[in-house]
Amino acid sequence: MNTLTQLVSKVTLHELFNPSHFPNGAPFSKDLLDLDCGLEAERICAFIRSETLHSFRKKGVIVGVSGGIDSSTVAALAVRALGPNRVIALLMPEKDSSADTLDLSQLIVEHLGIRSVIEDISPALEAAGCYRRRDDAIRLVVPEYGAGWKSKLVLPNVVNSESLRIFFSRCPGAGRHSNLPPT
Image (cartoon, rainbow, N blue to C red; front, side, top):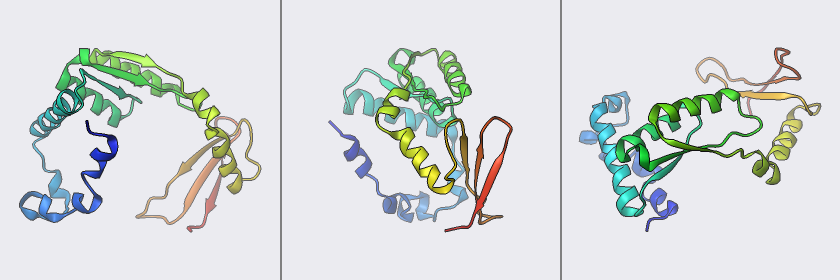
């Protein structure tokens, strides 16, 4: 049976970007994205079938679905590869999740015709100290940060800006931001 470590260790970043692995030894470029999407989707589905049914000897998969494009695509490919009766969506909202993520996740589940389980992971994150450590880290940058504040880290556009912006607000619509120099 393959473990996650064995699967991940099969491909290193050096191997991933090794030109000899690209078609005709071509260097990494936008031309590599000139794909036959139908063929690639079937190749991915064949891999999902092979790994699930033969390598792992399982009857189906559980896919964490956030409502975003990545997890939605994985769920759709899993359904295409295995059928809707062999795919379960695991929806894991937490106290800081946008309500939209659960709604979008449920739309994907309904569209794909798959079963789902909702598991609020807030208690687990709280018990592991994730929220406390996040808040402590934010207070290192903004000491007055506290209960009721919301935060958002906005990464700079590397083409137009070298600044990092962190936005804080005590209530929706009340903005405050800090431009930090690059480190």
